[in-house]
Image: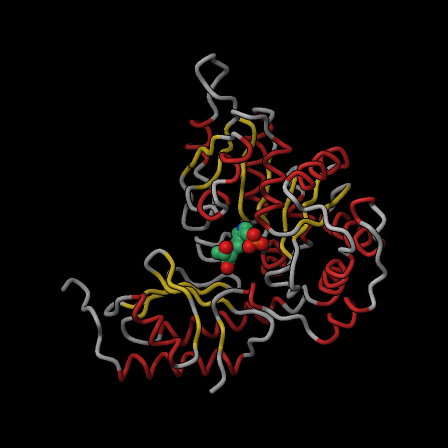
Length: 350
Ligand code: TLP
């Protein structure tokens, strides 16, 4: 039985072509700035995102943390969505390592920040208050369902930030998914932020790495924080070559992942007891199952070779490179048979 791994787009394996590009990469010592392939990736990323400069980092977590440390001084506040990845899943690094105070505000169902709450969080100068250092956005928004923030949404945050002279960072781990879903160049979305992190190791199919983009001055400073965080890599061109390959070859295909997510969602929504939470906009499909205890259901699905996570009272399926339409249909078929054969472990409300 084939295993269908829908846990995350982080599980993607490099294609033979990507491996070839990695094997043939021209290398040097990137801590000295001498790795030509890293330099090429950084130039490509900066140009694609419409920023002056870019920096290869080890992970999305490291990219976001380096950005926060670069934007803010110790003791400053970072306004971020209550449901943001940075606030919930990045080990509290901003506070632990940067002395920053995370200031959560409400996310709406589309991942947008509640602008009223953001306004409330920006307090006037006063000796009692921590200074605000940054507003942080996430696009696409993971916990909100892979939801996409468009130019209008981003512009409204940018306006508010400008009124208070605050920088904006986008955790764009999946910003290429947002751009493909909106059919706009990714630079149009990045334009509303001072800095953007995007991940190579998720839907773009690379084994390792993320890229932080911003002004030349910002990236020069972030480079120091990357070193401090242990992210100064040497012949990192091996990894960067995968990134170059991905930016050239793996972006347009994200539309297939979105289509497969839509197909999965449509079939799931037909099954009594299943509700989408919410309907997918990109490659993340979240749904609830009425009559089951989710942990047990995920374990039963795993026995049938369908791997996924339960997250905040929902199940998440992620479509990605290596998952074809037939895999999605097969996963739905196996889920149906688990539901048909299984004795519900917990009736809702019992
Ligand atoms: N997300 C992972 C898990 O950590 C949940 C996933 O499977 O979705 N920002 C966003 C929006 C993310 O979804 C993630 C990873 C990160 C940052 C962190 O990236 P890494 O794992 O490279 O540190």
